[in-house]
Image 1: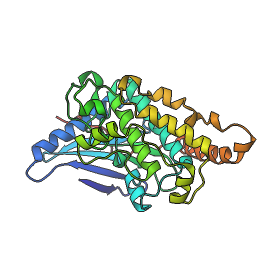
Image 2: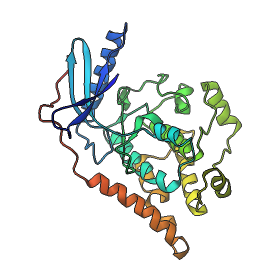
Image 3: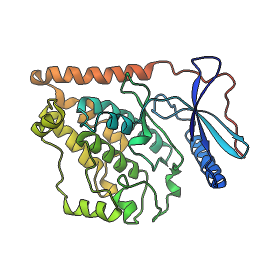
Image 4: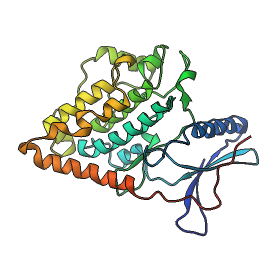
Length: 305
């Protein structure tokens, strides 16, 4: 359960997440503990630089775990729903991708897997920018503790190695993020997602799945799409959705991919499009550089028994 809480200071708005459910209090208290413990693992990572939700406080109240977070805007899923699942233009998707790769790179640096990356766990900071943050670390786990055969992730974001019961590591997050980006670009899921069987059958039956062509994209979205940009994104997505996790692109490699660095947008013929794309990225970077609002003075992390 999420609540919006306010102090006398109108600037000190926070989100209060309560891990409690009728008849299942014990289970959800344990879930709250796990989320707090996961956030303790990543507490040394800069939440602003690495695009991670900020936890202000955790406390126990009448057998209920309460987690106090910063206030964020709508999720990727909320925005897609509000826009009737119109495909997201690549200029708008690029800064989201860059920020998420930074988040995964930070998690990988401390050997942690999020394991629950999906459209509703990536949230915009506000309605006026492309600044986003990764939320909900209730299922985060150290990679050394990931057991073969574990039932993690939700369909349709579940990686093939998870479905097949094979060894896994933090690369499951890159697969899930690839599904997120494919869904944003297409306006729907790239593979059937009713059951694990349907997902695997889709992977096997349609190995040459593709994104919309520039003409198809223009017809559905009403916006022009530079072919060279489309090719760069398609290459990145294929590397994210590599079935073999050993060959899947890593976060640090993704940050250096042409789609993110925009090296492919050189030349006079692409100058106008490149200027627009770089301006969108610049605005996001400026947002990251803004001073992060301080927590209310009375907030402080409290260990949960």
